Length: 148
Image (cartoon, rainbow, N blue to C red; front, side, top):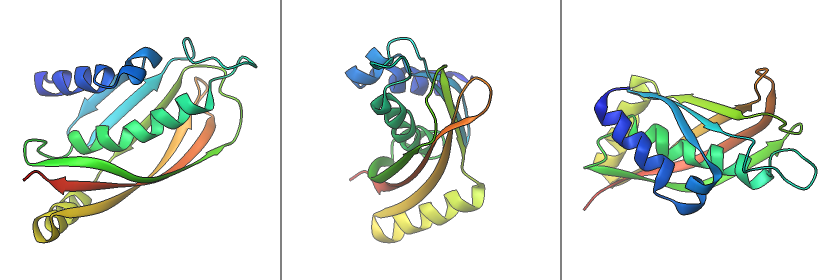
């Protein structure tokens, strides 16, 4: 990872106390692309699978992570507006999620932020176990806003 992205990754992993405690890791981050991991260890529930809140957190954090990998966070910041999750099967391993924004999508979001001061963007995410099987599906709406 480039130095800029290493600093952003370190911030994402430690800025929110509960996320740091969960052990969330930024596996890769580059322009317009992020891959995150939530370890099973520290996140096991009463039946031995990953706690539902940890899965939700992994997906919810992705909205902010992909935003900071795609936009100038000196000028803009992200907020979450709405997230829905569908739990498909128990998560019995570490879980990963990846997201990429296209250059066209980034241009659309920037244009809207510059015109209105804010812009919504959607993400559809698949949370995957170590075998690459989908354990949860998430749909969310995040918003980019202009720093004032």
